[in-house]
Length: 194
Image 1 (cartoon, rainbow, N blue to C red):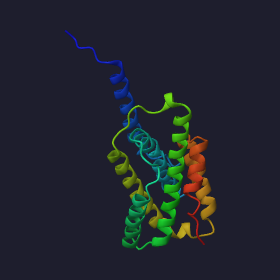
Image 2 (image 1 turned 135 degrees about the vertical axis):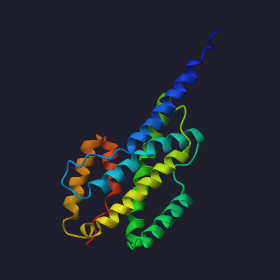
Image 3 (image 1 turned 30 degrees about the vertical axis):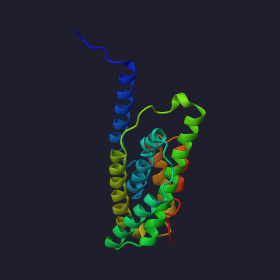
Image 4 (image 1 turned 90 degrees about the horizontal axis):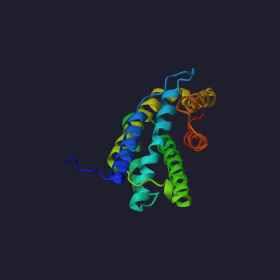
């Protein structure tokens, strides 16, 4: 005799599988169709922003706060230490990642607003934060490596044009919606320093 699986459990399992599959898709880099050397950096920033989706779902389901100042300070301190180890300006790196975190929080606030206004659209389940944090850590490492590799370009007069070309290419390749386009602009606003 076959045991019947409750439809709600099947639906919940499907949603969790979709979220985890989405996280796996994030690690696929965009093909560099733009001529910008900053495309890998901007692509990693966009992928890091996309991790806001499962993080927001987790926080929603756990009734957690979007902002976690203690965790942000810890993350920025660790990134600053990594910047020091790479002989990259600590203040520049923490400013870049501060912008990235702020843009990520903005996406999470947007999702919370959507779910508050339309509770039926809220995720019923969410993955544990460990997968999201591992993805964030990997994107942070990629971004720091790209910052170090492109240090001279990021501090040159050509930076703004290269950043904008890379951003346009990533937006197109990842098919980012309006929210993510604004978030990516905010996350990358401090990249160019002269």
